[in-house]
Image (cartoon, rainbow, N blue to C red; front, top):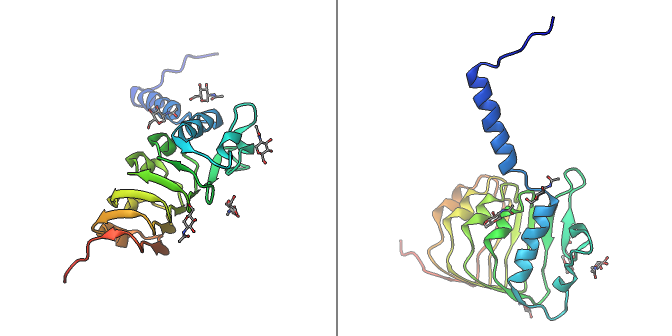
Length: 186
Ligand SMILES: *[C@@H]1O[C@H](CO)[C@@H](O)[C@H](O)[C@H]1NC(C)=O
Ligand SMILES: *[C@@H]1O[C@H](CO)[C@@H](O)[C@H](O)[C@H]1NC(C)=O
Ligand SMILES: *[C@@H]1O[C@H](CO)[C@@H](O)[C@H](O)[C@H]1NC(C)=O
Ligand SMILES: *[C@@H]1O[C@H](CO)[C@@H](O)[C@H](O)[C@H]1NC(C)=O
Ligand SMILES: *[C@@H]1O[C@H](CO)[C@@H](O)[C@H](O)[C@H]1NC(C)=O
């Protein structure tokens, strides 16, 4: 005999919460595309017309500098190095939740870095060398759980180097030379 099953309240609540978490995380390749188009809209100078290649008529996975993963079919790497780009990094970049590799070295990205980048929990490699970023080096660089390589040399970061960087357990490679950091007198 069929019987209606009533879920006990806590389990029902759990399902609702789980569903809400799923829908918040329902970012997909379409969202990746929108967020990369947001980045494109903040690039003011693209002399070699590379980012111009980022057109909605082709899959984001075929865009220059973009690599998608085979398993989840999401953007896992962004390599815009050596493209002579001028622009800023918008908070939308923090929505690329599968990103593990972010390389924009040798460009002219400037301004400060949005805290939303801390949402990139899978990030292992970040290379911002030789751009024009300024402002204090954010202490949240110390909180990426998987970050192995962090390169921020040849920028205009100032202030003190956050000591939390020394606590990053996975960090193996750290480049900070040629910035405007204060020397700490001991
Ligand atoms: C993908 O994400 C977009 C934007 O967040 C949403 O509108 C769309 O319904 C999602 N598609 C699928 C198949 O989940
Ligand atoms: C962008 O560049 C890729 C790789 O060179 C190419 O396959 C693709 O067709 C280009 N897309 C556009 C819209 O030009
Ligand atoms: C990143 O892009 C540059 C220039 O397009 C290329 O020379 C380099 O090999 C790429 N790096 C990786 C790891 O794919
Ligand atoms: C992406 O990021 C922006 C700014 O951080 C946010 O407003 C937006 O809702 C996010 N969502 C999606 C689906 O990309
Ligand atoms: C920095 O990048 C510029 C191009 O944006 C390049 O001409 C220059 O050689 C690079 N400098 C270093 C130290 O790599």
